[in-house]
Image (cartoon, rainbow, N blue to C red):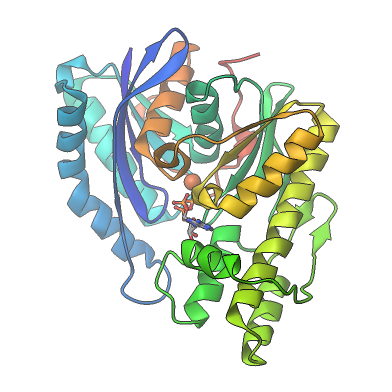
Length: 331
Ligand code: ATP
Ligand code: FE2
């Protein structure tokens, strides 16, 4: 089977085409266009307009790259949530129109679950991981238990990516700020105290953000502030992930989301995994960030497990929780 997936939860609009071969996911194409606000954060309506503008071109491009035409597509999948309403609606409307006009089945999928499944589908040896999903808006530790993907820990306020972006923005950096902060942090050496806020298995970043901004106001070297911000935030993430691994007795850890590109975060999580005798995995960068291929792959898994979705059931859900999905495609 071949599936086409449309991703549009936030600032990126992506189209991916995938094919199943021997229960693994082969990516035939995966094209993305990202909305860059001129200043400030994402304006949902503007992002949605951006998506509507680029989506038709991306669909043609993905078919061309995959070297197939519409007739070869067996399923149309889209990101049903969670995300920004106007963006989700744009992707969903396009998916419905495609499915109806081509007379192909439609499948709405949970974006967070897609981040996990693309790891299992494309990374050799990754079968039952604890996922540390770290992106702009999302920060969750997810693992499979008793028929669902359960959230073992998550942020109580902003996502780690948003925390980094907000910090960078106050310094006048352009979005995305994560990579620039990583660069500066490499030249930092002196640790400045910052709040380490964990509540049970959950974490909070807003106090950390304010405290980091205070260090900047006090004219502490920027490299040291970035270094301390990363060390503190990433240690919190690594700790929750380790606790989830200990609790579930899982022997694999998978990174996902745009912040998974960060070398220091990878190093910390890998060190933790190796110390536990567990395996560490990261999908390729184009499959870590928001992308259409992961949506297509999860849609296909769901469809093959026997699930069907009528157009009336394809309403988007801005607050679509990871653990709302009944996992019918694996044991
Ligand atoms: P979501 O998946 O929650 O809808 P998103 O679309 O913002 O959110 P991604 O595209 O997965 O998420 O990731 C974007 C985020 O990743 C930005 O916040 C950006 O600053 C961050 N990021 C990218 N590269 C790095 C890096 N090297 N270090 C830290 N953060 C990074
Ligand atoms: Fe994402």
